[in-house]
Length: 446
Image 1 (tube, rainbow, N blue to C red):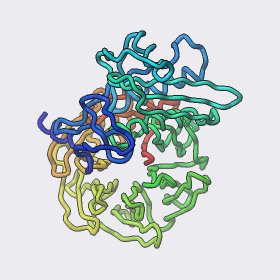
Image 2 (image 1 turned 45 degrees about the vertical axis):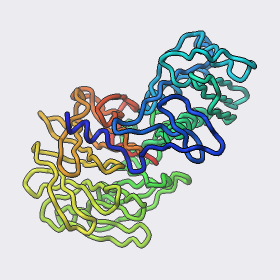
Image 3 (image 1 turned 180 degrees about the horizontal axis):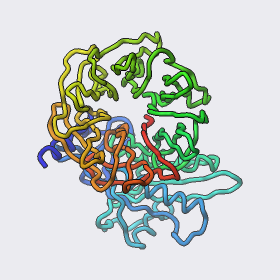
Image 4 (image 1 turned 30 degrees about the horizontal axis):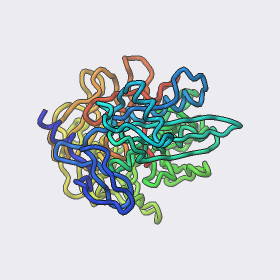
């Protein structure tokens, strides 16, 4: 477990202790908080990691039958439970009642705070005439003062989006890092009878079908800006690298020529796409310059090289190669130099995915005739198995904050593949997309 503790406690660059005084805000929520420069409040961070904030939702009574209230409550609960910065807790009915009165009465008894609660998220919501209205306030359980508030009035179709935004803004204020509730996940599903490109909110709602090619779509990859999705499409002439504009819905062809194209992945700066191209029966890694469309070959082995993944610095690639006879994970510099083998345990390892902080690489390994999700350090320390109990894990993809991994898996053999989320420490396994048919190859938007 030393490996687990060492690597799972790593955080992206810039996570350091923040203790400064804001010119506009001068308060602390509790002993784990410190003031941040500019806007919001940052958590104090130590070697043991960030303190988890205990949150109590203080909404209208749950007996309310209004659908807008039920949806609001469900979305807020899900987002708080999925955030590794928060822990959802319960409080007494009296404490919730008093929290909802903050700012509405002139005096409060602040001599006692609710034990086991750091903040109350006080909210109200309504729907009328196709418009959704939300009012959210964050109350410090100790000082019983309002420290954050947001009001939204939007079309009903945007209800879930503004609620996700509210929780992400709360996380940004308290920790200095935005959350992932606003993110979308692109994926492939064959529920229509053909493999087509879809996307959904990170919680599996608001699913949208992007393509209707009635053939095969594979390997979607969101661009770093989230404005495009690269993917592989198949026509009579073979496979091609295609590009979807998520605003217009237009699809353009990036690569369509000699050879089979597979496994596109964007560089962190969005200027290049690494792909695997098979020509004359040999598959190698190439890099495509998105602007000039110049294609550069990186590997020259007679073996199969595929599934590239950029390191966060954009200068290193992880990929799969069977040059030793079995598929294993390798790393090399973007110019093709510095090749080294990373995985030695297991006879078949594939689909590497580099974490945003560079500390881990997720991949899948064949164990007892089924693929298992694993993590390994870029220096080879590990590996560490995740998602025990699921079968045929495929295509791990890291969330932008590096805290979660989306992947596809089956609950049992001969069942459909669904999309799951799991924390990097192996906790919090959650199924998010499960429809009739197989859902595979997830990719996160920024």
